[in-house]
Amino acid sequence: MALLEARGVHKHFGGIAALDGLDLEIRPEEILGLIGPNGSGKTTFINVCTGVVAPDRGSVVYDGQPLRDMPPWEISRLGISRIFQTSMLWPSLTALENVMVSREKFMRARVAEALSGSRRFRHEERLAQTKALEALERVGAAPLAHHQAGSLSYGQQKLVEVARALACEPRLLLLDEPAAGLRSELIEALGDLICAIRAQGITLLIVEHRIKLVMGVCDRVVVLNLGQKIAEGPPAQIQTDPAVVDAYLGEPIVLPGEPEPGRVM
Image (cartoon, rainbow, N blue to C red):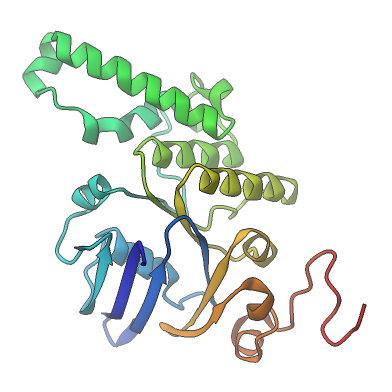
């Protein structure tokens, strides 16, 4: 049974079809890669799943719950978290404070209690800090906790973004180009982190242009072009699929340790 299932999803912007009848499912505790040329609809799909935009037609169902017309904060409460292509951190806040913000959905203290420093508010604030530190530890960013986000390198900011998403305690984590802007030596560490997150029982969808990262960590890959799914399958199948090579890759991908297409080991 799928954790998230999209059926016949259409989304147009003006006369352009960003998603054109997309069918896609994400299975529990898998790492699903979503790839394709720029403008193929990848980020639009994430935006539909998180309530940022509403589909024109079709449905998205998460764990049996239809998501249509549900605002982003309610979708987050269901257990879906995301990171964006570009940094969404508050630069003047510390890394810890940025992650603590994501715990707001778990807090029940009212504004008056926060202003008065009530016992419930102090308890919830301490718990938020503990959970935020745990999330930073999970991504290896605990030493950055008290650094201002604006002073961090791009790669460090990415780690804090992932920690903030994990602090929401998601069952499904959507990563929109997590490797964008990272130096090549950090890509392998990112792949290890993605696999470690899955090992904690979290399902992941990864939108990414670093194809070797996708092929190296994903269980299954879906390829979009012009808002339509043109291929789906395990990485070994996708990396040599003629339609994918023609529309996106340009040539078959050969990962380290694999024979070149057509060559017998």
